[in-house]
Structure formats: structure tokens, C-alpha cells
Amino acid sequence: MDALTSRYADPADVAHPLGVIRWGTDAAGPHVRDGAPAIDLHVAGGEGEAVTEVWTTGRPVTAGIRNDVAFGHDGRYAFCAVSVPPAARCTPGVRDGYLRAFEVLAGLGYPYIVRMWNVIGAINEPNADGLETYRDFCRGRAEAFARSPLPEGPLPAGTGVGAHSPGVAFHLLARREPGHLAVENRRQVPAYRYPPRYGPQPPAFARATHLPGGSLLISGTASILGHETVHRGDIVGQCRTTLANLAALTDPRTLRAVKVYVRHAGHREPVRRLLGGTLARDAAYLTTDLCRRDLLVEVEGIAHVPVPDRICTAVGSRSTAS
Ligand code: 3EB
Image 1 (tube, rainbow, N blue to C red):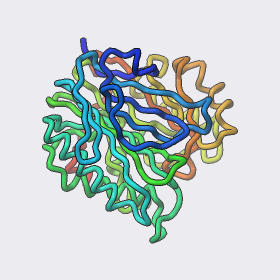
Image 2 (image 1 turned 120 degrees about the vertical axis):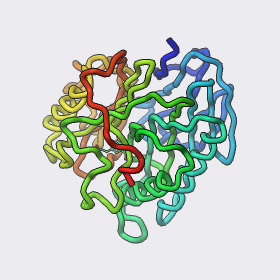
Image 3 (image 1 turned 30 degrees about the horizontal axis):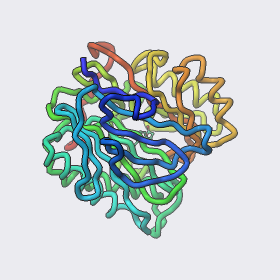
């Protein structure tokens, strides 16, 4: 009962929206509309790709804005959204934005972050120092986790993709109580142990989070084996490996609220043909850049796994990540 989940819907049709995300063609900072915190992300290649996602547990929500962080909470879960303006280097803004979010979550009493999404403008472009923006972002996020006022806990599941507008936007889901599990993927090295060739700070996220209500929130999953991108330049191979990576966590046919991020607009229909027979029919396909130049496709979704038996729980936590 009251499992945390999301669906593509008009927020007016959802009884108690905890957070609303427009995955669309414009960016708009965090705001509260019709009693729910919301953010607009510029990640769709056109209006035809755009979707509105609504998170809910079915419980009444209190929403507000504090310190430029839009939040909603319902006694068990909190959602919050932040945007960070464009800058020559994003580390300081990302660090400060995450620390603001952590303070709001701590103040509301939801200290356990279970899931995060980061959309990053010019993600593969160099910053003013020649460091790739995604790596610059990872440094800022790592600094924030290292200084976090929140108690130690499992790393959240994550998504890190490009945006068509400059700056960084992120949103988080957090719990009042512990009891969730961080899940890793036996086919992949934990991201927090990626070697230094991928940047000065490894990305701090788990491959999935399992919640006591049974939701399995699966991170953005790509064609990575160990820590290496496989099938460079081969969209068919990348789709196949991505599906196999998902299948190591759960049956990909059971995923809901699926998002498929595709780097090249010309790959969207081929990817839909390659994955559409397996993934949910209402999966969203979004054309946007991905965090490694050689990645062509990334997939995320939510499964319902009452007992997490087939999956491996992580050894990682914030302290092993920094
Ligand atoms: C990967 O597996 C692909 O930086 O939060 C996936 C999910 C990826 C989350 C993040 C990055 C992030 O490394 C990239």
C-alpha cells in the first residue's frame, strides 16, 4: 500500500501529486503549481517527445519553496527540485544547490535520499578549465555529499543526462525513515568505484534503490560492462547490452514510467523498434545528450519487486563514494 511510484499523466488527474516533472522543450526553475512542486526540464528533442511525469504515494502532500528549493512531502516521502544557473565552472553551483536541497530535506525531516535525476546543459562540452561539464558536475555533487548534514545511508539511484538549455537542474526523492537498499549490478563496477580516467570524482549513485513498499527505482542504465562503454558507434549492440544490464536487475518487460534517452534524433525510431517490443508501450523516448560521448542510449524505469531476492545489495555508501 502507498508505494512510491510515478506515471505519465496530467497532474490534475492525480489525487495527491508529490512532484511534477515536465520532460519537455523548455526549462523552467522549481515552482509550486496547484499544490505540487514542479520543474520543467529541457530534454525533449521536440513537442512530440514531451511527457509530464507525476510522482505520488496517494497520501496528501504539503508543498512549498524554501531557499529556492521546491518541495512536497507526505509524511513518508519528500520530493524536491533545484536549478543551478549556467556558469564557467559548475562545481560551486552544483555543490551549493545540493547542499540547499540537503538542508531543506533535513529541515523537513526526510534525511534519506533514494533517487536523483540530474539534467546538465552542455554535458559533454569543456568548462572554462577544459574539464568536461559532466566531470565538473560530478565533482560538485561529490563535494556536497562529502559535506552533507544528512546521516550516512545507502547511495541513491541516479540519472545523469544532457539538457538542451544551459545550467543544471536536479530533483530528488527522499524518505523519512531508513529501510531502503542500494542495489548494484553484477555486470557493472559500482559507479562510485569508476577509475580516475572518467574524471576527478567518480559519479555517486547506486544502480537501483529498493524501497520497503516494493518499488525498485532503477537508475539510468547504459551499455557499460565493468566500467567500459561497449559497442561504441553501434546502436544495436548498445540497445542489446542495455537490456541485458536491466535484466540483471529485473525483468525489463515489467518496468513502468520508462524513459529511453537517445543521443541522436536519427536513432529514436530504430531504438523504439529495438526496445519497444520489450519495454512498456507508454515509454518516453527523449533525444538528449548522455554523460559519456560514446553512449548512444540510456534506459530507466520502476519495477515492483516485493522481496529483493534476485538482486544484490550494495556495499557502498556515502563514505565509500567520496
Ligand atoms: C553510467 O552508468 C551511465 O551521474 O548520476 C547513469 C546514471 C549515469 C546516473 C549520474 C550517470 C548517473 O555511468 C551514466
